[in-house]
Amino acid sequence: MAKSLSRFFIRKQDEKNEIATLFFRVQNKKHKVDMLFSSQIRVNVAEWKEALSCPEKWMRHQRANFNLHDSLNRIELVVKSEVEGMSFDKSHVEAEILAIANPKKAEAIMKAKREEEERQREEERIKEEQERLIKEGIDAERAKIWNFIDRFCNEIKSGARLNGHDRYAPGTVKAWNSFRKLYDLFDRKHCYTWYDVDRAFVTKFLNFMEKKDYMVTAQNKYLVDLRAIISYAYADGIHDNDRALQYFAKKKIEEKDKAIEIYLTEAELQALYEMPLSGKQEEVRDIFLVGCYTCQRVSDYNDIDKDCFTTTAKGTPVIRLIQKKTHNEVKIPIMNPNLKAICEKYDFNLPYVVDVILNRYIKEIL
Image (cartoon, rainbow, N blue to C red; front, side, top):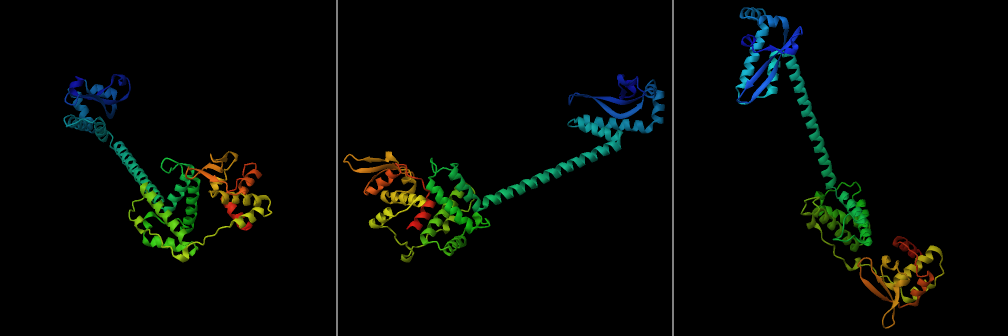
């Protein structure tokens, strides 16, 4: 009889309680649904069971509890509509039931849900804004010429960037560091970007070097360096200013701009060899003379040792070594006995003097 009077029932485990929640079952073959739902409505167990005992009592119960049965009827209509619809969503059905059974609670839940969705949208907006600002910051840093020059010089020194398949030679690393120092002076605030490179920018760079009294040959050298940096950055995808390389042209070297050739005669070299010196000055003088007698780079003649001295098949005394920059093997004829005398003086273990110190001391000595 209970089933015929109402689809709502009290579960067996709740029948001993004074107050219990009404449940109902939803079945539908179309959507393969067979679920138990809570009506979210609680009733007096004894009164509910008494009402279901006969139709008359059920009618009296309906008249005495109009709001209760009105809510139950509305729940039935909502569930029927959901079951007969195109699809069946359990969570949506439960939300509809709660809206009928407990409007205040349903509204509170909906309000909390809306607030949570709003909070999530705000978090997403903030996140997107932060990502945009970060990207703009990264793009702004990538656009600065100084940042690439600084990283480029550090990478060729550490070996992170190679010249083909080989590491950059120490002399090349040093030359690029010289350019870095010059550009740092030119762009003190490190504000120029790849998109600032135009004819006016190149002119400004040249004017800067002129004010610093750089010779035209040096200006051309650093102009080539700047063009190369722009080309490297373009190849690395750092910028897309494909017009930047069009603004570079070497300055014409006039006769007045050519460097005066300075050299020492054999008599002056001999006078330098015989000059009474001691300490660091003596070492610098000796290393300088080895460079003059061998016509090699500092990086090469600094490494001359006893094994480098040999003779050719015809008996000509020579120094044999592998040049660091070019990796070429060279045979240097010993044209002046002072060369071997200096090497013997140090037991063929020449003191190492960096070129900066050598240049500073030799100017004072000469």
